[in-house]
Image 1 (cartoon, one colour):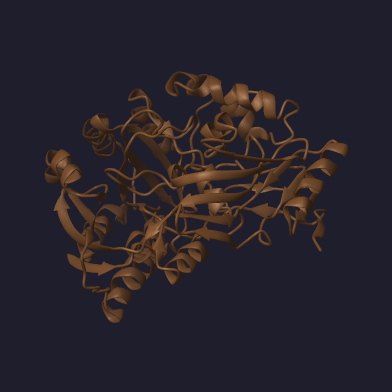
Image 2 (cartoon, helix red, strand yellow):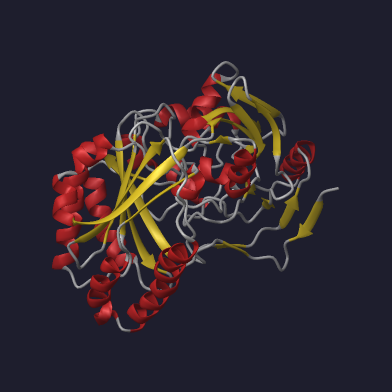
Length: 439
């Protein structure tokens, strides 16, 4: 039985606390049929519909004043096809649950982002990604999708079935319908060896091409106000497993990366002048370490310090120049930035609205501690990113609109034409989608 909650007192908030919504009602469907019925009823009542995941987007992509669909009963694995190398999973399943369930079956996704709190549909719909030389975003690992469209009908799509919908709906920002199930490509469990190591900004930027080429997964963090970076290289390994020790892991991942970092940010928020000094200490706090483990234990880590984030994908060959411009901008400004800048990469893919659509990409993410003013920093950073034809992450703060996207996405028109066909009455629209896709 589905539970329908009257939304009179219900205010929905995202994880960062920068987006709120007051829906007319909330629905928690327990089956695809119930979800279809909820969409049809919303249409009868003249209400718009949005599904929310765990609220890890910093944009209002999921906000609605109509019907809010909560997917927590649409969870679990529908089936594993070992011969095809796929798993079909309900859309509301958290990535963490998918990763642990696959591990029990001796399987894994090929690549993933750096947290796993999101639902599979929320993560894929906004283009969540990790870092990879050859392996792309989570959405690029999708082999099939099930979608409830505006008239309440259920559409299945893959490369063979409704291929034009498949080309777009893997990263659909909720504009084409409500995703109810996803089929991912999976592979037999493997091991990754992670090598984390401090490196100077100058060395990382000078040797970036080499570091990128020589590693399956390369990423780094640069600490503004310093010349210091932390690098991470993940490569497949024959083993043996050598996980991070419990005490060492707790010191690095909990105490330094979350506990001390939280305190440092609170101090920086209270007294911004202390930030450059704190940054110098923070950037040296984490020492070099190497460990070998199963993929989700290497790719992902807990993020308990809340922040607001902007991330842009630039052409990979423009990364070093863009990053140097960002550094110069911070140095010449009065900005005080307490969060490191994260840099990752992805190969080109064939998804219409993927940030890596049709081009090898590098991602630059800027963050600000929750509760500190971020507009000045993000505005200045965005000016640099857009000068390089950057494409913002659909779930992170940005100010771009449909006119801009039609310039930087070669297949933007293909997506909006499909939206016109699948959702002519804009049942799934909201303010954010009106801005980024047009009305």
